[in-house]
Image (tube, rainbow, N blue to C red; front, top):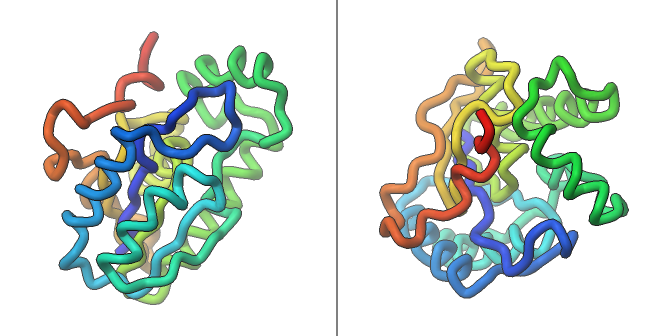
Length: 194
């Protein structure tokens, strides 16, 4: 089983390409770690960006696992993209479909899916701390959905997907029951305008 955790609320928006967590994000991460304390995870895979590493720290402590940084589960956007360009493209991209995206973005999606199959192929539980789009890719691959963002994925929500010979199978997407309502953030942003 792949257990995805979206990073906690970041301290900055698109202006900072690699922000850490806001105070709220740290509290979300702590509560998520507590919710995962009984998970039978044998691996913890983390995007190399700061907000995911800070989210993963309490999870690693609770599970007694060392985080493995993997580029394949990192943010979809090129870190060298100028802020203004990123700001202008993010809304239309996240409201779009993969079939409408550039060859570069579709290739990124395929690399992500291939990595998820590799991570989930061992039959053991793996926690993956990542980003909205990567988790959306996993949900889309599991459900056959072409939307870039098929479901809302809140900060520090939990998404569970089984990986097997027949492909990916969605168990639950964007679960936030472990967070109090005032700490559920970031779910609706990408779906605005739909």
